[in-house]
Length: 442
Image 1: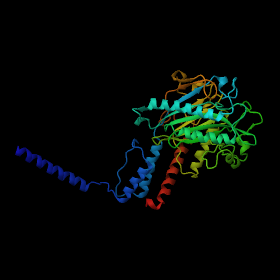
Image 2: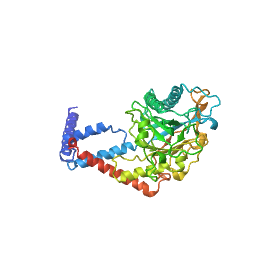
Image 3: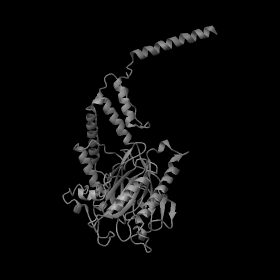
Image 4: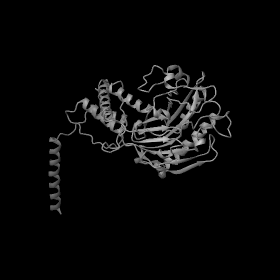
């Protein structure tokens, strides 16, 4: 017994000496004050634990610029974690898809804002319950679902009111109340609220989509139709305003313009972050897991005019020119909110698209999805706003595709794919230089 213990002690001694020798002469990272400061920066950035990236050890020769670049690469990897979207679609009969404009039995216009808000709250609740059913277990979000989005989609004109459009005061109230509704539901629940008609006091009419990202700090975005056409439903004494009329000196080719100050100031309430009349169709969405993706919205005939596609190419050019230091997320989805228009593949910005249109139900998940895969999850015979409807749920679809996938960026020419890489590399360089100049990082 004593001999065995002696051998064990001898073995442990040699093991200790060998380990000590290895620690003494191997290039081990030295954790200095600067490194602890950098670690705190990682915590501030909230880097996701699931990022599939191997961090390289920090050796004596690593400079501050190396550290900052490594951090930016981690951040870039985080915002490009794979995202999946599960679409729910509010389905009307074609004749009933114009909100309350063409209802045979019109409802009262006196309480229309309350009814619209109740309708939106009901739809948000359906989407939220579906999100819980699909991605929660035991009351908690699955770790694998941090970057999975559930979105409910309404078609163009789905929130149009009877007789006259929303006034400036009404749209102010509506947007403020929608923000309160969105705060009650889970992050990663999105609402694409078709379009609604609103007007300025001088009779200019706008066809506006509202895109909502729910959560404790909700994001509300609006996109206004740039190219109204004569077939669009109209109100007496109001005339549609196009982007060209609102901003006649804008660059026609770039097709992305915020309305001039007088109109922007007329619609949102003072201090509001929302620009109600907004012709920029690109919305950056963020998930609970820190991923980001672009939703590009075309409202019907805007798709024919390649509005979103031109806006994206303009965005890439701005990044190339180094006028912005933000990254362009690699994942994109083209969202077409329409009422009878066919998709033109050459006008898309992504291989993944969703269309909310009562006449083209078959393309709602993506061109890879089929109507046979959808299922009815909810029906409403007598809704508080509009006509009867049912809700279809499609299987989730991934936005992230590998570069060797035959469908990867199939709708962007090769030169634009390479320009996206150049733009992001320039943004990374600019961000590193900007952070390097801050005293607290030195």
